[in-house]
Amino acid sequence: MKGEFDTKDHLIKATAEDVRVFAAVTTDLVRDGVKRHDCYPVAAAALGRTMTGALLFAANLKNKEAVTIKINGGGALGSIVADAVPEGFVRGYVTNPHVDLPAKSPTESNPHGKIDVAGGVGRNGLVTVNRFTGLKEPITGSAEIVSGEIAEDLTNYLATSEQTPSSVGLGVLVGKDLDIISAGGFLIQPLPNASDSSITKLENNLKTIDPVSTMIENGLDAEGIIRELLKGFDQINILSTTDLAFRCHCSKRRIEDTLMTLTEKDLNNLVEDGKAEVVCQFCGKKYQFSKEELVALRNVGLGKVHL
Image (cartoon, rainbow, N blue to C red; front, side, top):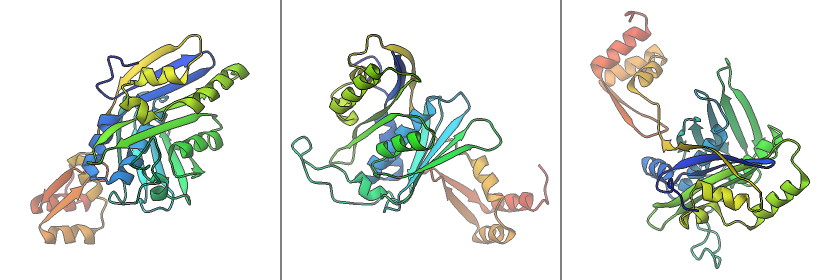
């Protein structure tokens, strides 16, 4: 169904009988991230899938908690990293955004061919997930990459590292002009002691639904995706809706704190250069520092001045 939230990114949480499901439309935030990092199609699809996956993982966290997903399969893209919080904000980057690989063979449903995300990600590496829950150290888990397609890798991670049977679906449709036409995803899990009939219905639906990006391109919002996933279930309970956006929490003060961790030699070199520019890896924002600012930071770092 096409509902009131179809014009902006959002995530919906729902339950039905013996299952729970999170579904998200992320077209605008993926477009934002892709433009910030000047991604070519393979990187755009990989980054969009990873950011969407991070939002789905974060949906089950409490406020002020966070999750980071890092995927590195040894491929040309390098690492794909995304941070997300349950309030609906995400940021991310890919090490090599200008990777250009030929599309996979065209099919009748996709005459332009499928973007080779797996080829860019590689299959020799790990999915690593850090959950920041307020404890002194984050809860960290990892699993081997099984396909490089990201959704299958996150599904495998949940099953092997967190012992949580799940199905993750992710999709990003990139146009010829590198615009993001549609993006989104879902995470669905049987609840403990789910009946065999519920699991069978769910498995059958997963086999027959359209790709996520196709459903969104055709006008479905997150609730519509959930109803496709849960066809045949008696009652679907919509629990909450969260607006989503690409948002980075970088700031000049955070960059200053990082600069003050440099060695005295490195700080002196920056002072001698007379200026410095630091670019946030996650969002691409540039921070400029004058010679006077660098001298002040060096003095603070060396303990000569106490704020």
